[in-house]
Each structure stands twice: as structure tokens, then as C-alpha cells.
Length: 533
Image (tube, rainbow, N blue to C red; front, side, top):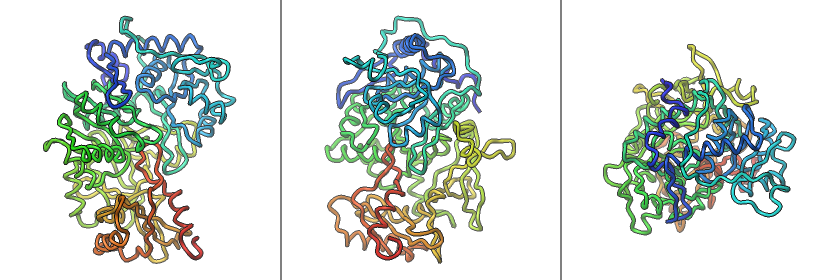
């Protein structure tokens, strides 16, 4: 249950209590960084709000923000909030124009490259009345891209920002889904939603006075300071996280003594691999939170080798529409993966967090159905998408439930089990296979980085195909033998008649962890003979 003290307004106010304490560290590489105090951060929010007001931004305006800089993102979001405007967060990608046409923003705030994309691809055309360019001005910028909005780090000498306390149900932000499992949708966050998410995150992070957060996901840099955590934002390639030089992550972690790391499995693999290759350990880290895709025991084991013995590794489950939902320690993940309760294959997600409730809708005879979530972390609607809202939101027992699109079960101890996306169910003439059930077993095979079960062909007549992303330098015949062993005792292992190798799976741009199965299936179909080609 959330209270007034959980709100963004209250948490910003609490930052004033320790004005000289570090609040945000913006990194420029492996070693260069700038530490920003709470006073500077608050002063920056106030000055940004004044600049936005002078540029014509008004209460109720919807404003797209595209910047890769953590400080600019924080002060732009909070500056808009101080004016009663609504920030909208979206990654630059092919669907941006359609998404922005949907929400109709009047303001576009971003770095020069984002504005080049806006002008070239027509993002927001017909809606925008104010274009603001962050960073230094270049010749011709005002004419071709937009008015300059410099956001230098404030000196902290000004008064803290002040604004009316918003109502819980006021729209606070629009955050777009990644689009990795379908068309991106703008998720509405009310002030109560963000307060609920902050409270739930605090139960997972369990912040202590000396904690330092390393945030490898840019929006998390918005939340870390509000949770009272000095937040280190490494210079990550946010459009392709796996292409980030790993030293740009590990260097700041070691330099600033990060105690908590929040990252996707793809980024955690970068960290673990870099440390292993260079003989490094991470002595300051007490807790690692993995999110964005399933955490595999093999990756957890690789991380454990470079962490202190008592460090905790947690796999966190949630979605843009409801984050976080559940968490499970790596030790339990490993134990339950090798000895799952009867009838509960797939991957265990853990128990729902305090205040969050989960249930299974439309369950079949095996208790498998769609995971639905209720609680203060759940967003109430998609912006300007009543069709999507009606499909995903339902009211039962006096509560709003979000249908996640994930298949799962609840065991007799109240733990959630994940079996894959409903849209990825493989339906053949004589079998129905869930992706996570097969992949969780296949991913244990030596030489396999990860696998993806696909259904090629029309629903009801699909051919089960297992795609394999091998580890570099491994022998394919050895991998095939290892897969036969890994799936030998699996009840559906014999139904996997086709195995295809793929050098690198296409993934979502946000985490580089969720497999883009539509693109992968198109590639697989081209390599199959017969009518499914």
C-alpha cells in the first residue's frame, strides 16, 4: 500500500535533507565521471522548469524526451512535472512516427541526433509546436532542428523547486513498451502508479545508508535518486547495450564502489565476461538485480564467481505495465530449476511482492493460463489505445487486473512459474509446446548460449523448430549431442525434430535480452524445406 510519503513530490522534497550528498554520477567512459549533489540536482530541476516555461511549455502538454544523458533525462522529466506537463519516454526506432501520431505530443526535447531523426522521419509532424535541442548550439540549429535548451549541471545555489502537490490520479508519464512482443504501446503512469512502483522497488533493493546504485538501464536513473540511492549512470549504448565496451560499465562500478547493480541479462553477461577475462572481482557489490528476460542459472553462476560469497543475485519479473511483480534469488532459481514441483516446468519467478497479487486466467486442465497482476504497481491504461486497454485490463473482485500476455502457473506455495508468451505458444497437429518449458532445459546444454523454440507454419499445424545460438568456437555436433542429452528426459523433447543454428539472435533494443521471435522465425522458415518455407 502506498502513502503520500511514497510520491515523487515527497521523495524530491526529502532530497533537500542532505543537499551535499551525491545523488547522480554521470559517466563519460571507463574512468571520467561527474558527481552531482542533491542540491545541484534539485536546482537543475527548477532551472529546467523555468527554461521550459520560457519556451512555451504549459500544463497538460505532452513532451517526448529523447536523450541518452542521465542528468538531462532526470531534470527534463522533473522540470516538466513541475509545470504539470507530461513526459513521454520512447526509444528511437522504426515505429516512432506511428507511436507519436497516436499520443499527439506538442513538445519534443532531445539531443541533436534525435531531432535529425525527427526532421528526417517526420516524428510528431502535425502535432509539435515546440522543439527543444539539448546540448550546445551549432550553426543553423535553431532554424533546422529547434530552439536550444542547454541543460548544464546547476551549481546548487538556487532555491529548491516548488510546485502544487499533484493528485494521485493525475497523469504523470507515458512510457512506451519495448515492442519486442508486438506493436509498442504508450503505458500511462499516474502519480499513484509511480509511487507504487517506487515502494515495490524499495522492497527489492532494500537500500541501506551506504548503498550506491549502478543503473545500467537509463530510466532506472530516474528512480535511483528518488529512492535515496546515489546513482551511477555508466555510458551505455542504450540503442544496443551489448555493444557497450564492458570497461565502461565495470570501471565506474569499481571507481564508485557500487553496492547494487541493476541490469539486463545481456549486460550482466558483459560484466561477468569482462571480469573473468581480466581477473577482476567486484568486492563492493552486495546485490544484483536482473530484469528484462529470464535469468539463467549459468549466468548467475558466472556472476557469483566475481562477486563476494554473500552477494545476492535476484531475478526480477515485471513489465512496463506492472513493474516489479516478483523476485527470486538465484540459489532458489537453480534449486527449483533442477527439482521443480510436480507439474511446474518452466522458470520460477518467485512470490509476488508485498501489495502485489497474481492469478492465472483462462487456465486449462493443467492449471496453465495467462498471468494477471493487480496492485499499486499496475498502470491503469494505454494512452489513446482503448482497444488495447480493453484487451489487457479487467476488473475483478473490486481490483484492476493487468493481463500480462505471459503463460504461467501458481504452485501450492504461491510462487509464479513462467512458461513463455501466449503469442509464442507452439501448436502442432499432435502437441502444444510452451517456449520456456523447452528452452529452460535446452539452455543447460554445454556450448549453448541460448535457444528459442519456434512454431513454423499455420497455427494448429506448426512444426516445432529449436533455434540455437552457440557459444563462439563450439563444435556443432557436440552441441547437438548435448541437446539430445539435455532434452532426453523432457516430456516433449522427442517432438523437437529440427534444430537450426543462428550466429546471433535478433533481440529487443531496450535490453538486448528478449528474443525477437518474429524476425527469427522468418529467418528459420527460409532455411526449412517444404511447404513451411
